[in-house]
Length: 101
Image (cartoon, rainbow, N blue to C red; front, side, top):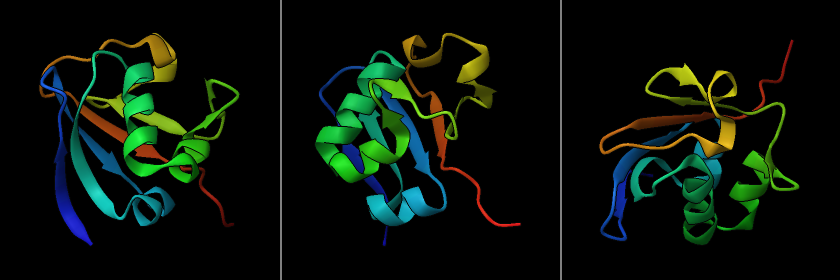
């Protein structure tokens, strides 16, 4: 499994880390991507990693209720959600649903 992949369109670069099952599906633990907003970042993730990963994060154009995304440690659910704007060198952590008991 690769530690880091770079995928840039020449704009704002953010670091994205995948956790648990998302890491397995993506095949990397983290990557750097170019996007101006979280919504755009998810579109880039879909084009880079495919429908399976995207479907684990987004459902019907909205963030799945059981997925947590942190931007610089702040839960986007408490901010602007998918409309959260990204800045150069932001850290985006994406956590899948937690299961078990």
